[in-house]
Image (tube, rainbow, N blue to C red):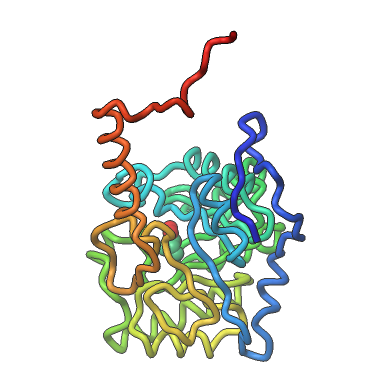
Length: 290
Ligand code: KIV
């Protein structure tokens, strides 16, 4: 499928339009796990902008507008200062840039934890402002009543358990979870609680590998791993990490490209061409009318 588009600046739509594909739905994602098994693992990547959405969309089942955009786009030290306004703006851009994937938008820290009603107010705004199909929120047993409240009121919820970055100050860092028996049992209980509460899927982040496999076997809904296990029902990564935009990435990231190297080389050539007056050349300048 061609991924060469220009963007119509009036509508932010791709031009030409990619071949129309029926967008996947939340129930279709859920049905990919059948009888406790997912034949073909689900593919999810983060996207924060229209152009990245256009490039990733044809290859993915789900695009996650993650609150990791706080670090990746805004250079913040953690996800804690990310706002609903940021999530709505980036979520809308990703929906505009995609035609195929289910778009899921992260609920930012502070927008959903205080009560199911507060979560509904924030999540319904995200859904209305962005056109996304689902939201994601962090937390296990403590968030189960909220997940039930939202799901029963028309808001599909992807849960996020294991290493939950919004709880970094409670966890004391971003290290893998589940090394003690107590943590192992808590993660298993969290998975069961969010699945029972109606989450259509869950992200399982940063856990020792056997827990990844055990959680995946223990629940009926798809488990999307990140730093978890190849046995999960799908995988997610931050797109900029797997594309090689950063020098340092967590252990669980595999680099599938070297975007930083390619940008650097292109910009070095541009700078040399500007300094030597090789750019702009005759092809990039306007001739006067005869
Ligand atoms: O915010 C994010 O990008 C995420 C993924 C890492 C799962 O939650």
